[in-house]
Length: 501
Image 1 (tube, rainbow, N blue to C red):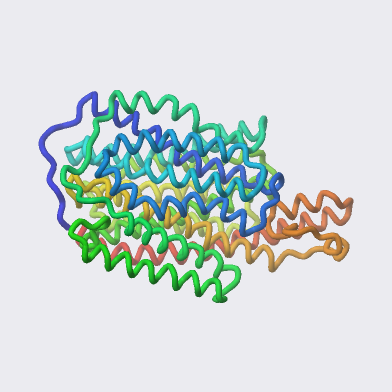
Image 2: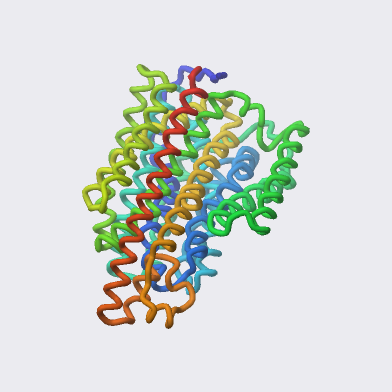
């Protein structure tokens, strides 16, 4: 794999302070994802979304990111990464307010879509600025570990602070966490982060941007819709549109003198293997959080804050593993470390799948083991991706890495979430008296089922609660079982593709 050798310049105090400032927008994106997971039960009760709407509330953020990251990374290379980062942060704050005060599922989905649009300007800009600020390979790897640790740290700070807000305020308050961070970040970014851009970027290609959106959005929708409806006309039409747009996008990049996406990078098995590891590690994390938050709150009866504290050890383990990877990669080849990370992830899911009736302890242990695997993979794979390109192309490379992250997040909730939802629906039994008075979407999700059951007295309410808890437990086992096979397959693929790493 081609690696661009850095200069001898080592990072000083100004560079490390700039890194600290760059951690704020990373925290923004990470907190927003994690806080929403713990707010889902309250959103289900207040806005009463359908099962499909609930997944869109989760997925549309990552969907917009996945569709726009490459375009925004390319745009940052052209107009300036710091400039795009600051503009995106301000827009992210406005979108946060829209999401916070949503009154319908549709409005919340729209707010989350705007968050995804502006979020697409944040993550590739932070990672590409790190590539340009830190010239020394050891410094850069440490900075990437800090970047990954802060991304995981949002899984600690977001749920804890968000859990406190959910216990004292309405669910929309969790989105307002972004505002003070943005107020602090913008002036600091302008003061200490150096601007960087590609000196010879070529023209911006809006047609490629449109084609990338027309490829990503229908393909992800096809995954989501097909998981519940099968290969119906809608699924096939979405697949056809996504695949044809993707083909046209690839053709355009191949023929362009200044492509938005350098497809030659994908010919390198190490680069492609690192991307696959990114996607699959986030798929594991998103899938676990999707069912973990609901399991802890709605089945085990914990408060949002208590649920967040259960996952703190796993989030800390993720951060520690990321920094440990900086040392380990100097002694152990990546073709061993990355497959090992997936083996650890599969072990975490095995704990969730085979424990029987889940407990607070089993969830905490499972997430800790899963977190160690994710922490190792994130630092190693992002370093592989960034070290493969010259600094002036860092925006595009960072965007590719982030796209893999977001595709993994979408697959985690779309595929694993669909397994959970389908299992829950098929094994939920409801007394006839409750079905007679059933409201629309009443039994599509665990949250809506428990809320609808409240209107019945004993013994109907108790019957529904017991059946819902049993069906959800079984859904968690099925979902975790599916994730075990995904993680083991990823370990095998990474072992083969990273054999030269």
